[in-house]
Each structure stands twice: as structure tokens, then as C-alpha cells.
Image 1: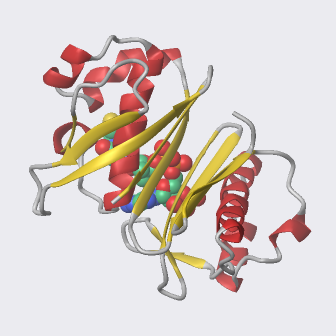
Image 2 (image 1 turned 30 degrees about the vertical axis):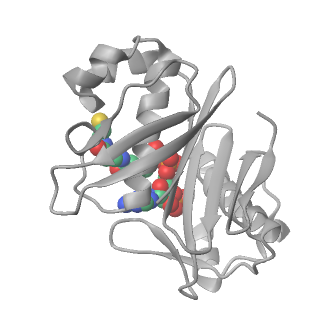
Image 3 (image 1 turned 180 degrees about the vertical axis):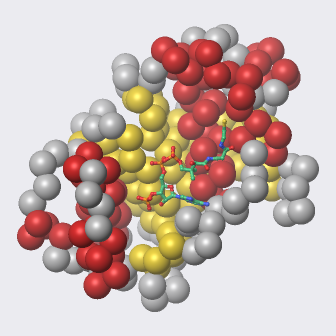
Length: 209
Ligand SMILES: CC(C)(COP(=O)(O)OP(=O)(O)OC[C@H]1O[C@@H](n2cnc3c(N)ncnc32)[C@H](O)[C@@H]1OP(=O)(O)O)[C@@H](O)C(=O)NCCC(=O)NCCS
């Protein structure tokens, strides 16, 4: 997957960026509070991930011709535009950062490197009925994990368990759409359609409410 920017429709866009070296002047667009947060990240790799995710948001916004408003985090860790307009979601993993913005609807995005070790933790985030239809290959399990993370982020509230509160419907290995729902919480049940993109080593998922 190349660094890419994609206009999903007239209301939403996403960007995926390869994490590279940082250049301080590239971050002049951040809000004052974001600059403080950025300056306080001492771990270089974390700093690159955090910064590149904001560059990805900026690129998605540019694509929609929306000025960067600055973002703050709520008590759950979810980012919101400072001007109260629109919705954003961010993800970063070793080597890549991704962001999605929508003018009117909550969104969730997740990017994951496909790793063998996910095979060992399937039962921590999947219930029996999900394990029954998944083939236990790293790519398929990573899709399931990532789809649940996107749903979690779109919903945005702490206290939602990937295993117990997010249920995926059966999907095929080559599926580009996964359906899932949040259930068994104080929040109203909601069904999500999660888009899936895959390369040899990466899974990208995103959902729009
Ligand atoms: C919060 C969580 C979704 C982050 O995911 P992650 O894979 O660690 O990291 P990602 O890079 O994909 O995403 C990080 C971004 O998620 C966003 N985020 C954090 N909490 C969020 C929330 N409650 N809602 C929406 N987005 C959130 C932040 O923007 C963060 O980026 P930032 O710190 O640069 O601002 C994850 O840690 C989590 O809590 N998952 C579900 C809970 C669960 O059941 N876990 C156990 C399963 S075994």
C-alpha cells in the first residue's frame, strides 16, 4: 500500500502515510495544545507515529478543502475537532499512520501489520461463533481484530470489550466488507459496515456510522 489519500465521497476522506523522519517545520499547522502534546512525547518512534497521524488528518482535510481545526481528546481518548465540526479517527502502527475525517458522521479507522502472533490471542478478542467461521490464518484474524478496533473507535466509549460487546458476522478471506454490531451494553445496539483493504503485510479497516 503506497501512501495514499482517498476521497470516499463528498463528505469524507482518508489518508494513509508511511512514517518517515520528522521535520519540525512540517508541524506548524498543529494547534497550540497539540504542539505541547507533540513536544512532550519523548519516545522517538511514538512521536513519529503521533505526528504522522496528524499529517494524515491534515491531508484528508486538504482533500475536502477543510482547514485544519486542531483536535482535542475527550475522557475516552477519542479525538474531536476543536471547532465542533465533523468527526475524525486515527490509527498508527509500526511504519504507518492513517486518518479518516467525515463532515457529519462518526468514523473509525484502524491499520495493522499482519503478525503471526495474533493466532495465539484469538480467543481474547473473539467468541466461539466467530472462531468457528475464521480460518485461524494471521491475515484473517488481523482483519477481524482491525474491524473490531474500527468499530470500537467509531463508537468511541471506554468499557466496550472487543470480545464481549462487538460481534462480527461471518465473512470470507477475500471480503472487502465486514458487518459487525455493538451489543450487550448500556448503549443502543448498532450495526456497522466495515471496509477492508489488504496488502501482503497490512490490513486497513474503516467504518462510517
Ligand atoms: C484505544 C484503542 C482502540 C487504541 O488502539 P491501538 O491499536 O492501541 O492504537 P491505534 O494506533 O490503532 O489507535 C490509536 C488512536 O486511537 C484513538 N483512540 C483512543 N481512544 C479512543 C476511543 N475511546 N475512541 C476512539 N478513538 C480512540 C486515538 O486517537 C489514538 O491515537 P493518538 O493517541 O495518536 O491520538 C485500543 O487500545 C482499545 O482500547 N481497544 C479496545 C479495548 C479492548 O477490548 N482491548 C482488549 C482486547 S484483548
